[in-house]
Image (cartoon, rainbow, N blue to C red; front, side, top):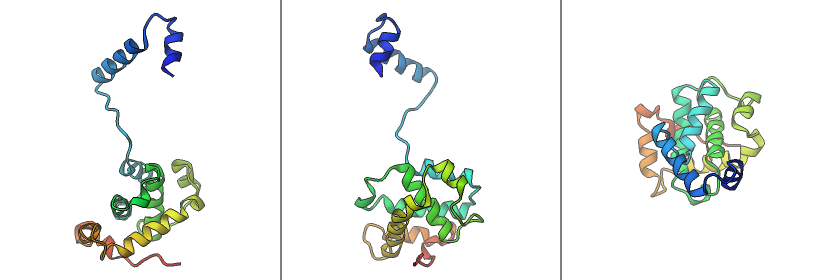
Amino acid sequence: TLEDFVVICGDAYTDAQILKMERVLCAELEYEVYMPHSYSFLRRYGKCVNADMRQLTIGRYALELSLQEYHYVSKRPSQLAAAALLFSMRKGGGDKQEWDTTCQHYTGYTEAELEDLVDMMDRSSISAPEDRHCKNIYKKYSHQVFFKVALLPPLGK
């Protein structure tokens, strides 16, 4: 904590001085501090499993739909991205089709921990064509440029 830094410095600096210097250092190093979002996590996870562009597009479609629905708000961006990756695997995107130890290692989530979220994403993709908040996303991802991923059949059980 900040108080720990003050103690470590032998009270030579106040907490305000430490924070000011931290801002100066971040600015000098051009270090940008921001809240990570699910797209960043999906990109990282995709690199770990060598996902192709179609697979990442399926995941981005699921994430973009999740931005429109309130029940996703309580989920962590890393969890949303991991579920979107699993969703894309099940939708048939890419060569990698199963959640293995590599996926679990890099995401920190087991397949079982993501099941409910994947089901939610599937329901969102099913209702997207009729949902007034998601129609444009559906239309966008129905285009060839986005591999027509919105037109893929539901996962089903």
